Length: 130
Image (cartoon, rainbow, N blue to C red; front, side, top):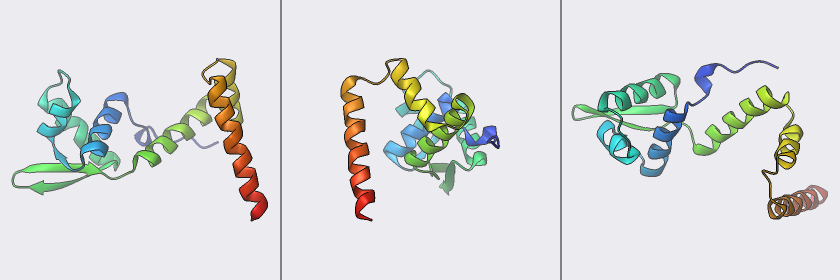
């Protein structure tokens, strides 16, 4: 299985910044800093936004004399990339092994498993119609 580049993955801080941008839309460094509610320095947030820009995760536009950053990927795409990475690295590429691991470690409640069963049943019904 080919390994993904580290640049594809978001660090914890990068994900926090992306969450701000997904929620607020285009924002300057100062706005992101304020929304993070942390003790980070302005320059740290600026550096992280520049790293995200180099990774292709955000786009930037110069407004007056400050860059405004906006997501270049959707939250759904970021989740999919992260899940693919976890499944590849931890479960040998098997999504089934991931689900079984969630069940074995009791990360899925009986209610969640019932919802999964219902979703699978509905999915099967849709496939039968096609």
